[in-house]
Length: 445
Image 1 (cartoon, rainbow, N blue to C red):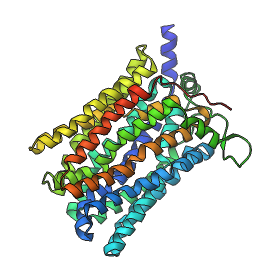
Image 2: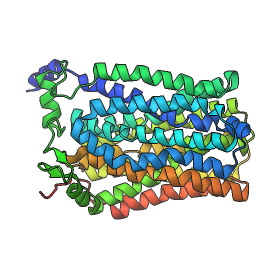
Image 3: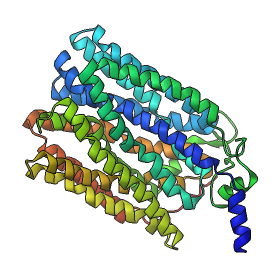
C-alpha cells in the first residue's frame, strides 16, 4: 500500500505550484502598484500642496472604484474565466499606473483631481485580481493544501512592500517620483504576456497529468465548475442575484466578511499612511522610511507563510476545518494589537520592531481567502470572492480618510494607531462570536 501511494505521488505532476508562483508574482506587482502613492506621496504633497485631508481622499480613490467593481468582476470571472479577465485586469491597471507619472503636466487643483481620477481608474482595473486568485486556488488546490496556497498569494502584499518599497523609495530619491510610475507600468505590460502564455484551467493545461487532476478533484478542488452563473435577465443558468441574496444572508459568511474588513484596515494603513507616518511622525527621510518599512513587510510575509502552514498542519492532524482556520486568525489578530504600543515609545528601532510584530500577526491571521475557497459554492466561486473582497476593501475607503482627518485635526498619528489596533480586536470578535462552523455553503436552487 505504501509503495503504491509513493509511486502515485512520484508520477503526479505538480503544475499547480507553478500556477501558484505565477499568481504570487502578479499579486506582488498588484500591491506594489497600489503602494506607489504611499512612497511618492511625500514628494507629491510638497510639489502640489496637498494637505493631510486631501491626501486621505486621494489615497481612498483606488478603493472607491475597487469596491464598486467587485460584483461585476465576480460575474465576469464566473462567466468568462480567470485567464481572460485577469489578463485584461493586469493590462489596464498597469496602463493607469503608468499614466500617473504624467500628473505633473497639470498644476494645482487639476493635478490633484487628475491623480484622484487615475487612482480611481486603477481601482476598477484591479478589482478582479483577488477574486480571480481565490477562484484559481479553489480550482487548482485540494482542501488540505488550500490554506498554504492562499497564504502564499496573500503574503505577496508583504513581499511587495519588502522588495518594491525600498526600490521605489530609491527611484524617488535618485530620479524623482515620476520614474516610479514609469517603471511599474512597463513591468506590468510584460506580466500580461507571461500570464497569457502560462495560465490554463486544470482540465485544459497541457502539463497536468491524470494523477494530479484526480488528486486535486478528490481532495475538494473545484476542477469542474458548477452551473453557469447568468444575469437575472439573461435567461438560463442560475441568477447571480439569487445567489448573491443567499450569500449575503448567511451568518457565517457575514462574520467572515466583517473580519476581512477589519483585517484590511491594517492592510490599508500599511499601504497608504505608514511610510508617511515614518517621515512625518518619526522624522525619517523618504529613503530611510522605504527601507524601514521593509522590516514589518518581511515579518508579515513570514507570518503569512506560517499561518497557512499552521492551518493546513492542524487540518492534517485531524482538527476540524473550523479550528484549523480560526486558531491562526485569532492568534494573529491579537498580536497585531501591539502596534498601539508605538504611541508609548520614542526610539525608532522600537517603533519598527512593534510594527514588525504587529504585521507578523496580521500575516499569521490573513487566511480569509482560504476560508472563501473552503466555503464558496461551486456555482459562484468568483461571485463569492467578489462579495468578500467588496466588504474587505471598503476598509480602503474608510481607513485613509479616517486617518487623514485624525492626523489633520490632531497633528498626531496616536489616534490613528488606536483606530487600526481596535479593528484587529474586532476581527477576533467576528471570528469567535459571529462565525460558527466553517463549511462549504450549499445553495438553494
